[in-house]
Image (cartoon, rainbow, N blue to C red):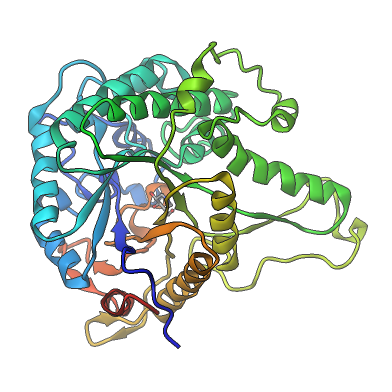
Length: 443
Ligand code: IFM
């Protein structure tokens, strides 16, 4: 049986600047927090860096041809803030914007709709030196940068995403230290979220003041959390984790403020919140982006399994190379939750899986695991559309095998295999399958 998608449905792939561009010191780009982080011994697996990444900065024309071969109707990329405003705020580097100008023209000439993300984690290091997202000034600098990008590209780019996954920057960057800037238990996690969301609201206002007819949104990583058992402590733990990951972001951007129940348990003094901030954060959105990878089972850390009532819930045994369980039904759950928030347009702005990609047939990676992962998630997407969820498009994560942050080049999520020594790109079997899905507009 073929499940057809609506005619307006956009089929895309997503990438991020630091993960693919390379050329970190060209045309006036300044250092980002990730350039600095990669240089700290032991922080990134194998000492990998984004210095060259997929060399997309030089190979973007070839990469657009690859997108064309796949039949993509949309492409989500991010702009590197340090290329455009190397000092973080102030003078705009037109040479840096030239790159994105050419990229956008190239996409449009090929009939591919650009989806532009303004911040996918590569903060200018000079702003980090002033306190990064821990301080309010970064939110204002972000809005200035947004306005600069909009004034150059807003005549052609009609889909904007302010931030990508602010939870990750706060949690992995300022609590666990696995991501740049690498702070461990800094106690600033909630301030970092607040300043990012403030930056989001200010940037959304700046975008809206620019060219008419743009769709403005934010890309959030959202996850269902399932309690390990029906023990009240497990139920509370799962509800808390889910709230901190989902409602903590969705409520303020939709005008509901930070959830009272979570504020009470977070211990966050909220001293950085200034009168009027929540109104800025609630700047109306035209769309929301869902980055979905997995559902997590959460148990209260103080409980042993023998203290829990049966039945115990386990994550499914199937996992990706990230160690993440394969849980397609959670995608449908998150889509319906977003619909409940009343968003007029929803995009799946990331969804995909890392697998070792060791099975070859001739030159081609036979990644049945990835194909099956994508297919099962697309079935959920189709069912959600059938239920009336306003899902407008799907972006596979990701186009090219790329720099997977602290795991360097060791994890491959791409539809296209990249030989990082030669930069040769070869479609995987999943890429061929995705091309067929797009051609049929269905699975
Ligand atoms: O590679 C990342 C991406 O940058 C953000 N979302 C999750 C992906 C896989 O970890």
